[in-house]
Length: 284
Image (cartoon, rainbow, N blue to C red; front, side, top):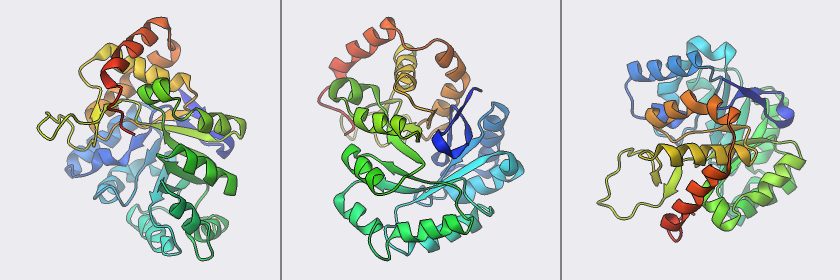
């Protein structure tokens, strides 16, 4: 699998990232199979969080045989100094001495910014942990473009995990300002929501992948390919697929093809045509 350098981190990450939600609620045998498959296909970057149910506990033994050759990222939604307890517990559960990337997870409000950068806030802990070698790089994840941009003004975060979604971007330009800043400042750009389609129509709609909180693209191969190529064209260094093995493996199997055959007019025609079915039902 093709790899990209994540900004200034020096990390040469696979173009597809293994999201820890894939292991949430799965059997140990399936988790081991998923991770072994990923490694065999060239995936070398794994991302997990304590907020993903039992993902840490399930990923830990499955990843253990490959840890020395893999990059491991984790994240936390804790905004104050108590983040140190979650950080150290994650290190313990995942049986690792350090995280290659540790992220402030899900920044979404002014209150989040005020808290993490205040005295006794989460950033004080993470900066100290980085100095002590428990963290190699500090990053953020966010769904709010304005809040992410504000966070980057306070600290030189190494990576940004953010939705780069075809429908939101074509229709609203969502993410463009942040992407341009990340490119200019040479930050690692990690894309989520690549295969997001729309919000669920109602509670009775068939939910093929119950871990997903929105409808993902899974029954239209041409649309899925165009959506993935769109995310790559916007500048994503790596894609984090939805939290189910079927869609993770789909992107893994095709990623090099998408990179070698980038977004074209035909793909854009498909995306623009489908946009009419999604407008008004965006995930954000």
